[in-house]
Structure formats: structure tokens, C-alpha cells
Image (cartoon, rainbow, N blue to C red; front, side, top):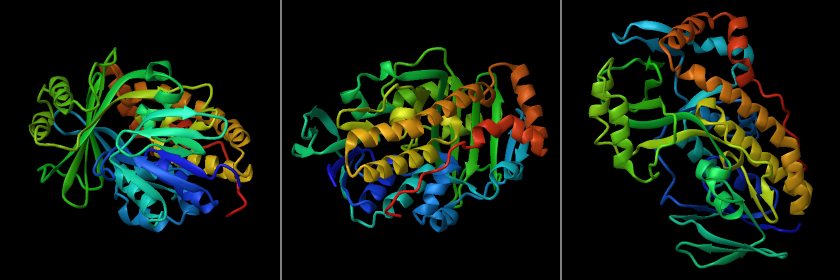
Length: 398
């Protein structure tokens, strides 16, 4: 086995999944994460498809089922809180069967990380600042830790991947902005509760959704349109809050009550809704996985699942090639890249119907959702987003 010592930058979804499979295949992975610990809170992800299959191979389904959110309804409401559209989650069973669940992204990340059982070296509170490749290895400089040499480096840092920036170039070369921003935060003891439901209110170009967690917290997800990307640092939390207050200040529905809780929040997520388009996912001894190279966008609803599948395939191809990275990277891209491109195209088409920019668009979307209980309508409206036209390979060490 060649090139056993592998650095993985990012410990969200793709990073720990990759570490799990690399360790299982006999490699020596190291995880590095900018945050001081695993992230908590955040938004809810819908989890299905090939990522669900990977989780099953990892033995994670009992833990995922234990922390799944008991969501059975998507409820669209008007300014008075009266239902104007929506559907029951049973409508998805014709396509997904029972292999589907909703879960906090942070819970999914923690379950994957816990599966490592402390057997993978992890460096929290640090990141890479320089990557120098040679024919024999990669010399990595960290922001805080001593420099170190690895055989391979894998970027798993999501939309704002540090490895992608250092090895392939600036974000502007690869990011395709879809015209929306998404933000999320949570609060305790919010007075309005709809157990087991995602409740959404929309006006043209803006939408806010709330859902209740079993621990008494309520999570809010904001989506709003913006013709141009905003000049906001990912770490400028106050500016992010100012933008949300500006966009949702109308006070209609529950917006005033929700915004009144925003100032006290410290767990805010705020990002553009973008995709990452790249012709190649590897360069010499460095490669990318998950949203770092094939982000379909938050509105696609399948980023976590696709990240797990990509990590599984990358680790498996490195094992099959006995660590010969050039052959492994080529096979990984050949088998997975075309599939990701198809998913990105479907997600881009879906963005406009998720948060319509006109009142007529909202009306049409609401009426369509009322019909989704009919199997053929659900398949027509959401089938391309839900179906995974790929079969996971089987690798020797399993």
C-alpha cells in the first residue's frame, strides 16, 4: 500500500466519512478542523439516497433513527397563519420508500465522527495555510501546529474549501451563485409550535421556515433572493443579522417575533446559495470531496448524502489502486463526477420553485404542493431531485 499518510481538511460530513473508510482500508488519515470542536445546532437536512446506503454500510442507521426529527408534514401558510399549501411526507414514499429521514446536520456529523471511535488523529482549532507538492509528498504548513509532510491531502471543507483555494485557485473561478442567500439560527421556548411539521411563510423572493426540535428549541431557516452576491465576511455575524433584519422586517406572519430573538443568537449560519463547478477534482497529490468540489447548493437538500457517497468512493478507489493516487483520483472522478453534474442541473432548476420571486409563482407552487399526495404528481415534481441514478461500487475490504 502506497501513500498511506493522508491529511483530510474539514470535519463536517465528507471529512469524517472519508476518514472512516480510509482507516478501514488500512490508511492513516488525519483530520484537521478550523472550529475548536464539532459544530452544534445548524439547520435540518433531509437524508436519503446513496448517502443513506453509505450510512447503512457504516452501521449508523440505528443512531440516525434515534435522532431523526418526527417530521410528517410540510405546511405552507399565508400572512394570517392559515394553510395555503403543503403536503405530507408520505408522498415521498413512492420514490424513497422508508429510506428517508430528517436530522440536524450537526447530529449527522457527530454520529459519523463518533464512529471513528477515537482511532483517527484529529486537530481542532487549526487549518492549513500553505501546501507545497513534490513528486514524493505534500508539505503542509498549519496556522498553529508545526508543519508536516503527508502523502496526500484531501479538501473536505465545503463551499469555502481552504484546500481548493490553495491548490486550484480562488473561489470566484468555481462558484456559481444561484441568486439566493440562506441563513439559520435557533432559539428556546418559541411560543408558536407545530409539532412534526415544517411551517413556511413566503412573499416574493423571501421565505422563512420554522420547525421544532424535541429538546424545546425551534430552528428557523431564512431564504431570500439577491441579484448580486453580498460583500459580507463569513465571520461578520452582526452584518449578517443586519441583512436578515432588513430583508424580513415587514412583520408579517411571525417575522417580527422571530427577528426579536435573532440578536441574542450565537449559532447563526449565513451563506450564499451556490454551486461549485470544476472540470477536475484533483491536482497532483491533492483532491477534493463533498461540497468542496461538487456542491449542488443547500436548496438541493442532498448535499450531505452526496458528500458521504463521494467520500466512500474516493476511499474505495484509493484502496483498489493500492494507494496509487493518480489512478484512484481518475477512477473516482470518472465514476462520480458525471452524476454530480446531473444533480447540480436538477438543483439549479429547483431553486426558483423553492422560493418563487413573484406572487403568481408562489400561488402555482402552493397549488402544486397540494397535489403532491398523488404519487404521479410527486414523481413528476420531485422525481429528478429524489432519484439517484447510480449504484455504489463494492470494495474489497468490506
